[in-house]
Length: 243
Image (cartoon, rainbow, N blue to C red; front, side, top):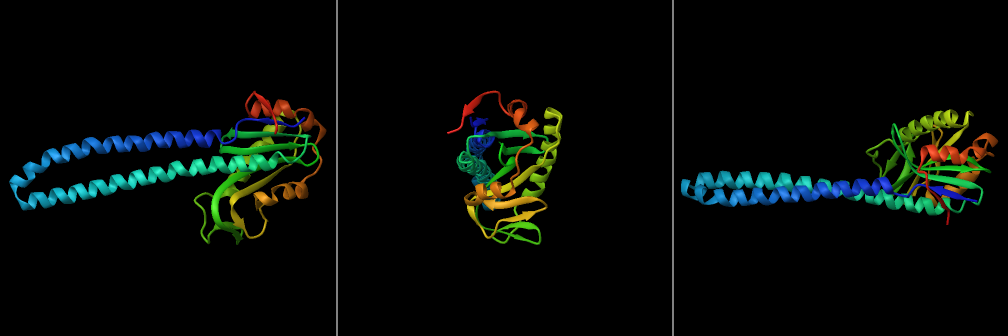
């Protein structure tokens, strides 16, 4: 039976909610500031034109800074929301692997979070990181570039750190050291060519399954036998039948 553990996009949606609250907080701050400025305005007019101009400049600078901060918060809020959608898209693709597999979503680890962990009896263990960026993705000089620019995070380094931690955790839990294949998957971008950087495969969701099949090797019996124990330690306790 195929099993799925964890809820897709939970962490990213929680992050979006927290950022939404922060954005509302900035809006609340703006209201008393505006009231205070309107209170001071008549006195500035009595003092003279110079004071009025100075007050106008002060208001302009303050409102511009506040608007910029709110815009930043909105952008930060949208980023994890798009990330949760990307995770859901990858989750739908992973459900097509076959019956003899187990998928753990949203694993917290020392280096952040692992979006998806796959145990497949036929293909082995895979760590998959979902990316929601849009545009053109290509690998130039062993670096991912999105629309010609380096992304804000080095996704390959992130995947390598998470993979190293995961290999150690699997050995600690199951007593067997096993290979973990890592993939960075773009769900909303055109990836020029699926490429490997330092052992991490960069691809899009269309070619996710074919890359798993290409990279896969039968899973060690000890890992397959202990898969639910491993998932219980790394993920959530509740099991759900894969769609």
